[in-house]
Length: 223
Ligand code: DX5
Ligand code: ZN
Image 1: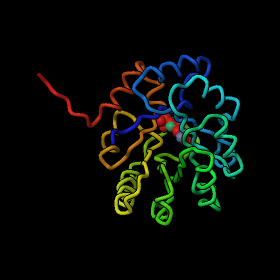
Image 2: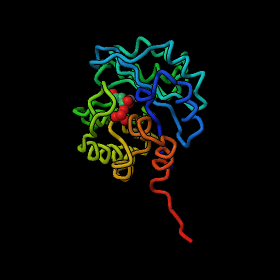
Image 3: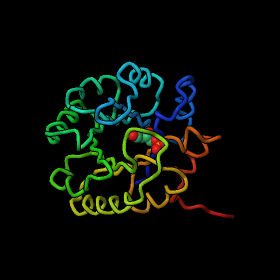
Image 4: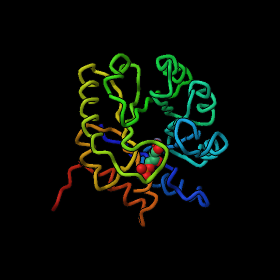
């Protein structure tokens, strides 16, 4: 499968959000990554439903909504109604993860599970077949612009092996500190989706960065 690029709108300029959305709409990006933070699960607050709904209207590509909130099961239907195609909840925030995955799928959205850097991928062994996407956090969630934690590469390999052995269809998404400097290594380790916030939106030519991220691993022919 060709890998997917999901620019994280947390790093966008909110004073000109519709231009930022147009840039992504007209780029080679595949999804919009949308970070919801509640100030409790993570030490930061981002935005909620009114803004997700507005984003849905501006986006011509799917919204990949990453819920960094406690009790995410309480809000699944509302997140779906706001326009999410992929809904990702944190393993660490769910006492009944299997139930929440079922809840997400019942809305027709794809079900994602995110793991904090300290959470071992082995904890997903008994439900990997039910999960559409695993989001491995490569920074401690809560803020954009942090440094990639390199141990994530080992987690990607372990998770990829688990998925292959089980013959599951689960996608591996990497979130935090991803950019042109490390994307190739991340993809070689087995990632399918790259979330990129500051490396895209803070670049002088964001569309070019997206194209370059998208082109990694594709054969280049010189004549
Ligand atoms: C971190 C968020 C990330 C963040 C990525 O808590 O989940 O999606 O926006 O931003 P960068 O790419 O700047 O690390
Ligand atoms: Zn995220």
